[in-house]
Length: 84
Image (cartoon, rainbow, N blue to C red; front, top):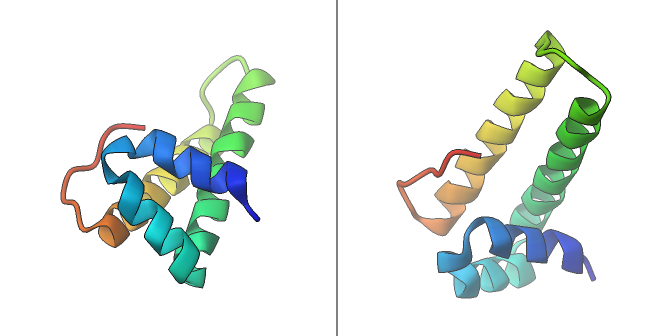
């Protein structure tokens, strides 16, 4: 079970808890998206922990995280994208 990925999505989108659980349990694509999102979030944080100034790599991680967030929002059927 991928509990940490599920928990992370629920933290990101608490208003969609039930839908997230249903999608996570019923869609391999959504589950994979949750895994990618958490990995990107962790990679960005690890990068930031070792970097003093903004860089192209940081910007790429931020864009990827934003794109993944938009994919999650599409799954949830919401048009509102909160800033990451």
